[in-house]
Image (cartoon, rainbow, N blue to C red; front, side, top):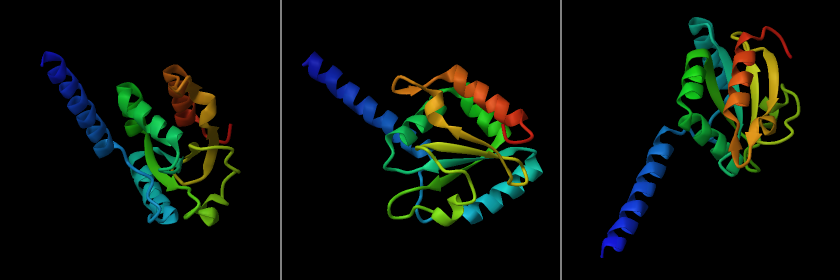
Length: 157
């Protein structure tokens, strides 16, 4: 009986944690208009003296989920992003590839992909997130180094 209780507790706890993650995680929404979202983000970025991150991916992409989970589970990285960037999720899927919007940026080699823009909406960096991976997640040191470099950058590097 004790083992059944422990197993049940573990299952319920896991489901609740997954549920909390989904509540905080912003999903890729194919119904959103990335051009309009970017306009809004640029207005906020100018007012708040921040840069803009375009997070390109989709709900179909396991690494897109992993990067979100990684950011949410690393308080220092999450807070650094919130303090210094406005994040715009850009959906890429077979159904809604957002080709017109993404044609304004360099070709994306894989997903997720991050474009960093200045507060005027001009591209300053294109980041292949594969360079930030470690095992089945991401490397905290590499990720923070990228964010700090992106935050201080004035032009494409």
